[in-house]
Image (cartoon, rainbow, N blue to C red):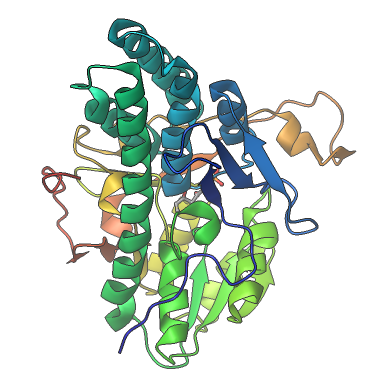
Length: 360
Ligand code: MRU
């Protein structure tokens, strides 16, 4: 069976796209579906500078580990394209400065640094400004195309973990809005739907920024998949009820031993899933593996602005200035993870991601 589902549903705005009127692609701009406005409004955000792209990543106008990798790569193109007429030394300096600026936009997802490294490596042997810009654009496009293919492969690889008519729980948003394809964990449900398995998917709201309520519920509707939104606080009762066949989540960084950083709240789900004998699966491309770090204690965890917790879209829900701790991610220890599904394989414990496959 060919399970070929388009990354962007017909008529919808793509998550990330490089747009240009020129056949060379230069000059151009990177366009995002502005995720801060979803689901009320589907609008395009057009960025032509590194600072605009960096700001879009920081504000979560574009978000999700693989998607910010692609966004960062195109951000680099946006930054160096104005230097196309400059000499190699000047372009190289611009490339390094822009990459450093984009890299620090968000710390946890390793895909961002990974994509920027790839673009810089692709430009290393270029002798002119114009060829450097062309090489970075070609690399950014390749990263995007590879992620789209990786999503499709992860969906296919995970299919044996599902049953006909199964009910699943996911967290945050790992769909087309978080990747260049159909998604990581969410892509598994899209693939299952295409395979006729009719999955049903529960998702929590994901406080404080509501990626579950705003984005995953939006994508479930967009794909025609049966869904049910729960308050985050209902996850324990749901997992204890016996209605959930398995939990599928994405990842922002996976250490060598399988410890996995993902959206805050993932760790709690993993513990409750274990306590209720519900299998807990992580679905992520090999670009999310960090072979440099032995375990999850080395993963930098982003802490975000307290104002995100004190108010939502300007409506305050707590006393002004009250102390807040707002970590964006947590680490799920490897021993709670039944499988890690990548585009290459379904891994089972003990995990050892010491070697990243060549060329990735
Ligand atoms: O803070 P966000 O919205 O970027 O967090 C995203 C997630 O946690 C996703 O689950 C993750 O990036 C992996 S799935 C593509």
